Amino acid sequence: AAGVIQSPRHLIKEKRETATLKCYPIPRHDTVYWYQQGPGQDPQFLISFYEKMQSDKGSIPDRFSAQQFSDYHSELNMSSLELGDSALYFCASSLNRGSSANTIYFGEGSWLTVV
Amino acid sequence: GQQLNQSPQSMFIQEGEDVSMNCTSSSIFNTWLWYKQDPGEGPVLLIALYKAGELTSNGRLTAQFGITRKDSFLNISASIPSDVGIYFCAGQARGGGKLIFGQGTELSVKP
Image (cartoon, rainbow over all chains, first blue to last red; front, side):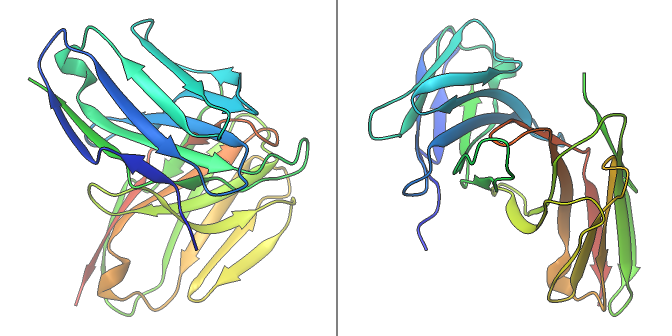
C-alpha cells in the first residue's frame, strides 16, 4: 500500500539559507500534518492542513511557512535557518472523518542539518 | 496545554519477557494511537484505539483505551530482539486534530 512520501530524505543547509520540504500524503487522504523531532525528543506538532486550508497551528516559528496544494501535497518552507532547526521533520496524513476517529500515518521523515 | 505522561522512559528486558508501558493525560482524548520508531525513521503505527474501554490486539501487542479516556496502555508479550525501539503513545482530542505525543519508552531486548 502507498505510504506518505517525503522528500528530500536528507538535506544540509548553511545558516540563514532557505529549505523546502515536500510531502505527498497517502492517496485520498485530505489532511496533512507537519512535525519536528529533535534528537531524543518526541515529535512536536508544527502545523496541519485540511482540504488545502490551515486547520491547526502549533509551535511553528514565524520563519517557517507551509501550504497544501490542490493535489493535496504539502510543502514546508523554512527561511533564515538556524542551527537549532536541525531536526527530523515528519509529515503525516489522514482521512478526516470530522468528529469521528481517524488514523494518522507518518512518512519516513526528512533530516535537516544546518551548519 | 495538553500533555501526555508516558512511562517508563526506558526498559531493558530479557528476550521472551512481557512488557507493559502506559500513558496518562490530564485531559480527555477521543483517540489513542501507539507508534514504534526506529532511529532515523518515521513512527510506524502499531495500534489505534477509538472507544473508551476498547481492548485491541495486533499479534503480540495488546493496547487498551482507558475508561476515563485519559489513559492507555500497551503490552508486548514474549518480546523478541526486533521489538527494540522507541514506543510512543499519542492522543488526539478530535477527528482531524493534531496528535499529542508522550515522551516515549525506549525498549532494549537482550537475546
